[in-house]
Length: 406
Image 1 (cartoon, rainbow, N blue to C red):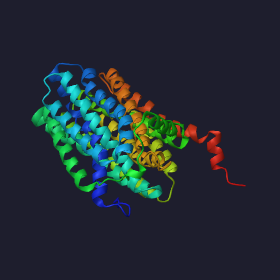
Image 2 (image 1 turned 90 degrees about the horizontal axis):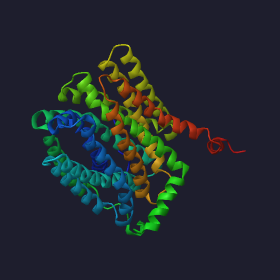
Image 3 (image 1 turned 60 degrees about the vertical axis):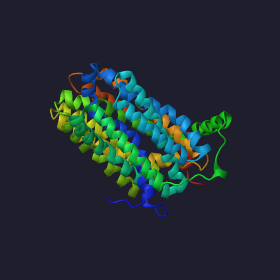
Image 4 (image 1 turned 30 degrees about the vertical axis):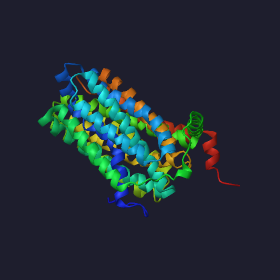
């Protein structure tokens, strides 16, 4: 299903924002095939190796709380280019790291840089579009971003097979440089000086409180963040389950992971069309329900003896639902107003990546000789997004909002 960029937004701008949006997740997806290799090389356990994911996600989440106010105060372009430079430096530092400690410092720097890129990508969409047009633009960008989980693990697995885990970080540095060049050429400043906010603690605190107190923001933000947590339970365990339990080599794992990830692209593309006739809330509820159904299907098929084929089939359905839910939920999160868009993107990003950071060490403790504990963890986390949306829908305020005027 082919997507067209919304009117008034050039293909170059859409591509650049899509590249920014996928850069942070790409630095996770590309590296996950290398986790067993890194654990063996540095002689550490699976849980310790997953610290390279955890510290990156924590940095990515916390730094967004600063990146949002910075982008609202100083504009989009300069902070973006500084952030991309930090991402590249962190990747180079990780590639040449002599110890795990230095590697983790490089990952922190990468996370800070990716935080600036992600916040500015989301805010830049709303700088340029609103309402239904913003929804279509988010869908197009997430369709582009959906190729991250499709391509990154396969590329990472192939690079790991040739240059090891250090080679993967070298490739990340190259991708960061290419993204910076694209942003430099395609993205001009999109926040006028008159619309900028003062970089003061009081103003920042007020903007953050305004966001979290708004039901129209916090409900879809929590639903999107819990869906993101589910995604990282899947990501955090997939490399070990697919390789250690099912016996796949890194390159084969990358291909298997990409095959299920392709469903994200299909779901995001479908959401862009569906939101033209149905509201974003309808698409979000349907997508999150399909996500949960897919994980349950994976558990049932695995229990029936299909094992790898069962997991891949169920997870393809789950990723289809996730791909549809994400742009719809993002439209709801960012559609509540035109003020302090950087802060809204920052609060959302912090919620997403801090929950993801909490998920990865938990997954590390659950990994064992079979996939059952991992599948249970995915089922629990996949149920959270439809639960949040369902509870919000039956509150008195929601019922009053749906009641026809007398």
